[in-house]
Length: 161
Image (cartoon, rainbow, N blue to C red; front, side, top):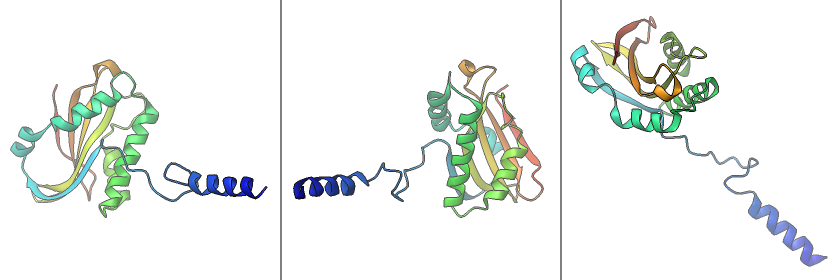
């Protein structure tokens, strides 16, 4: 009986490790979308050259091509907000700017893969890049929205077509 109790106690202790929902240890967030905060002050020509971020659009398309759903889009948006929060950003502002792009609408084939808090023509902004397509197997095009953090207006829009 003592041996069985020891075994049971050992099983419980070692069972409450990393992937156990009872523990408080956080799983790392996925790599996509990438979220950064910079001191950059962009003008249109800077972004025309830089967009798309080829590293992250390729990673995004590898993850979601053929299987992008409305729930996976919401998941990616939630991860983006969690990452922004971890960078001490006001998630209500990020969320409002993200929604103002119109890319989170159900059934729209579009998913965020990159976000940057920066300046555009000296205005505070969020820059969002999305992979999009006419269908999930067409995912791979890009759209970029530069959103004013105060007015939530689009300051610049870039797309591949």
